[in-house]
Length: 491
Image (cartoon, rainbow, N blue to C red; front, side, top):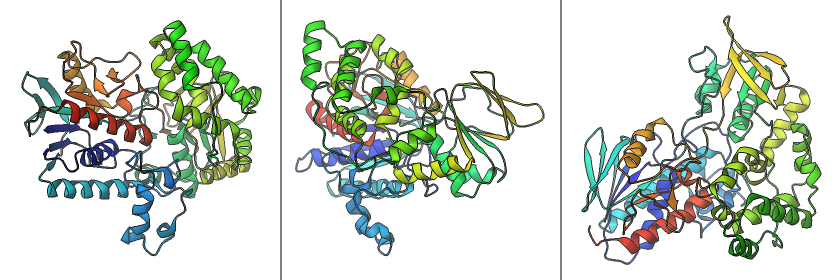
């Protein structure tokens, strides 16, 4: 079986690992070709080499390329020779590591997978170019890059996330940094006493602020976004049993109404959080970022809201999202997603403590209700909020999200070729339409045997939070099983 993998980051590593385990002991031979035009093979954007203050936002004991073996990464770390005489050699499961360390694991595991594949008689090749076109005949699929054309039986899109958006059209303005990564290249270009505006208050914005603080920045730092919400602070995971927003409750409502509307989801969510003892008024209140951080840090041993949300994400995330009509999904994304993301995608406690210290000292401010940011003719920028308040800053670092399932400009020619030839259909919410049972791309005219699959963020229209490592691992397993079921014996 000839498989093209479009994109060579963490999702590609997880897929290759899944394929090797699924086909172990079988006579089947696979010829796998990975198309990756960037220098970030295995690591992608998220886990490439960078400053150590940029931490993975999940405990080391839960990070892995295997959903059924959560300790895989930690075992590698404990036995990695370069860390033999460091604290990493005995790192506890609840610790946090720099993202670049996780990237080293991905790189090492990719090489391990390639060696395993070679022992089995497989081939795993890397084309160091971006795929730009795909065409399909009855016999095979053609993938074209600048180097030439390859022919395959199956294609899996592992495109990762794209570069940030530019909502205020600042590209080209002196002092504007359109992409915060890698931090070790961007931050040294900023004057130590500059007033820095960070666009975005999510995890990327947190990376920028923390990177500035760790590098000894002396100037003011202002983080701004529409809602001014920082990620929550990850607490110790406690077992939680859902009693209201359960898979069975979702099934009953879908059986009764044919779909799950957002108002029904809200009622079930409200009842679940109330039963957990969550103060919904305080949760929804417009409060200063420092106050929220302080409260979260005081509840690291037991955060009832976070425990309940974690249980929901594992047990009902897919049933709820898949049962919602597109109109309800869009309503959630437009009106409620920004408020929910801090709950299910929190930051490590050490990061939160550093930010809170900077807030208490007056160096760091988090501002909501961003209206516009403009470049001044004489240099610098002006931030205007929804109340008309103006703030002058010296430089701007762009840490905004590029939108749901945005894969970046490099992937667009390839995706355009899929949609123009009817091999895929764009999701109006972002990314591509998929069959949620297999992650196969939905074609304009369905194929009897699917040949195109999508893994990661590009599936986020039909799957909620599809770019998390856990979801990538789980969906890589599903794709691998689909490949095994639909293989035509070629290869």
